[in-house]
Length: 112
Image (cartoon, rainbow, N blue to C red):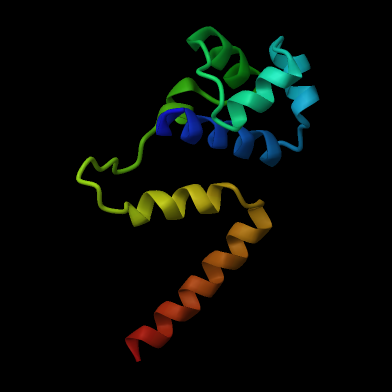
């Protein structure tokens, strides 16, 4: 499956987990089958825009937020800011705050 399907699936999973929803509950709220939700989250299915809209609505997230691409690069180089964003967005709010504090402390030592 394409990278965009995997990225979109991961973002849906991140928002679902952040809201404390199971795949089954998201399926119920969006009117999609739980198996379909799992396939989308794993990037195995190319979801229709209608399904994505239903899922976004159930998550109370705008379509633009799901499709937002941060610094997409086509030159074959790793996009570290994008990878960091995706990594952090998969964490809980508490984990994000902890990681941020660690980064701030690391930055202080770099300056000394």
